Image (cartoon, rainbow, N blue to C red):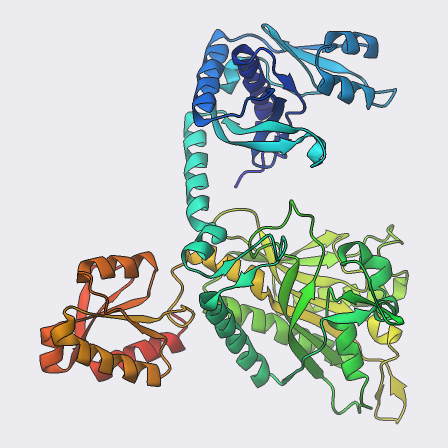
Length: 583
């Protein structure tokens, strides 16, 4: 999707279109007062005070028609520099503009732009004439508190987009429709994957039974891969003392992203935002020989991070999440091999899920930022050099990003391009020389001396929450057979003649651990089949007289109109193979 705010051509065009929209609103609602109308990543919006008026779809249509009249008239957009006194006089009847002017720095160069009978306070830039705003669309409207403060008055906000050509506009509108179809929040509601409730709190999703199945399958999948690679899994508390995070350094570097501390008896606790301090203590519980390393500690851990209420989004941006987390404690000579294994695991998982559009980002520190990053040049140079050399050895294409490292070390992030929307970071692997020192971790080397291990922090799925959101949007909710909450739905055509056989099939498939439902409602089979399509059930069995008489199974795959008839054993072999292939 286009970022209108960063596009050099579309940014001024959308800025100008926002002014055209405000001019049209002023024509239709002469008493309208205007706050701000910025260009944003998704296009533009304008906040306005329309008194007691609440906008409707009919109003939006009328505003669009008026905008077309203004654009057809083709007035030039004229820039003018004015003094603060002139600005205050010009907008004396608009308290919102007066507030903007009074909050400007004394040395601000104040400008306004005029087109025909409309003048707006603005710093620009804009296009030459309103004619250039011909290809626009008002997308949606909503309420918005003045200055984003719920204590202030509710204003009306209208969103829109503008393009240079009709083709570009139509393509964008088609992308928006595609994004609506793929929105995991809508899919999650339609398929009963998860819900939210204000009584629980923003950013705190509740996984419903169907969602719990999906999540459990993801957990089983990655657990088995990690187990075979020698990971040892643990459970640790989802709280920790403030002292724990002071020891790790997160209290100084990450406190603003944590929930407030809680006083319990004589101790201060916080909901944990990450798991590494707990895993450091797990490692430190025993004395380790160099022969034991690498030690790989994994956990499916619930963490809590403060996200602004406006930023939370379904499962994608949450305040309570479950991480597919692990920490690998290694000797210096093992860094390369262990890092390669993590990258190989990431690529293996992406292959199984059909994820192809991704790139690797080597996130490095900003040397000038002594506040964010632990101040140890030798440590950073060694860590960054290690990661860079391993990536070069692997022949993996990557780009470097200064200032994106964790406070304790550089990291490799995998940025994945979804079907719609901006790139998201799913997997990460971070190299850490610092935390093992802070927790006084050690192992005994071949000479009987204590050495400090190095830690690789890694998450393959990232969080189960975000990964589920990603997969729902990639598949439009048509999950692969192995992951679907219901794998098979059995529909007897006529309960009087076919229900016994259908029930026998159901029991057999359930006993083979296939997630199966029997829909024997007294509804026409066509109605029940349509419902199976709506719920995106991968396989629907239709049981009629032919199947009963000949001990057969007739099935239809989601998205297909073809019905195949096979023996029961052939059907079981088919679905077993599909599940093994993650299809």
